[in-house]
Amino acid sequence: MMKRRIEPQSGFSLIELTFVVLISFVLMAAAIMLTTGTQKAYKANASRDLVATELRYARELAMSKRRNVGVNFITPNEIQLTVEYLPGEAAGPAIAPVYLNDGDHGVTTGAQFYLFATLPDTPMGFGHTQAINLAQPSGGGAWGVMFTTSGALVGTSSLANMNLIGNSNPVNATIFLGMPTNISTARAVTVLGATGRVRSYTWTGTQWAE
Image 1: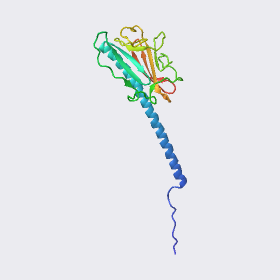
Image 2: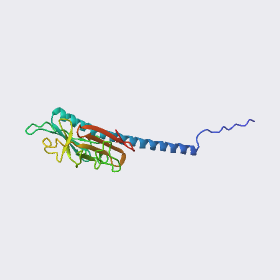
Image 3: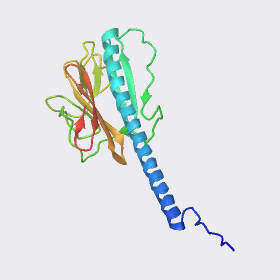
Image 4: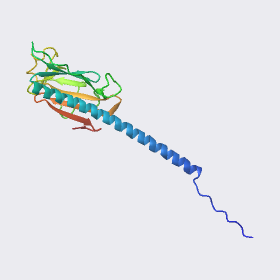
């Protein structure tokens, strides 16, 4: 009588299945971390670009309308532009403020005007004592600023009556921003007062890159 041959059963052992599950969890965790980091970088870049775009718009508006345009940075994440009409001139419609973080006002957990104290100044070297750093080239404190009809960024100690004062005071500006809990989201925007040129910077982990 022929004996039946018993074939070995194919499949995975419990140890092999455990390793597969563990590897899957590791890959999922890495994917989540990568996605989260990418989202934060995207939001930080979007906020930086919004600041740069708003500054360029203010400069172009001043030059095209032949009227000074005030720029007011309101913490934590608001930018307000104001056309400075001449005395007795009918004022046009107000410009709506813009906010970082997809237009959310007052969000303190997302991108905001923020200075990471351990980071160096940008290559422009305009100073980094505060998140919104506005100063005359020869030194000075934080000022209200406006773009003139020539495209320069100038400043005065008050936003009031900026059409009458401050025209001879070029102001170099650096606006630092990021998410306070994540230094990799550090970004900066600079303005050269004399010309109004706007530049954007990203912190790479070792330096500011334009």
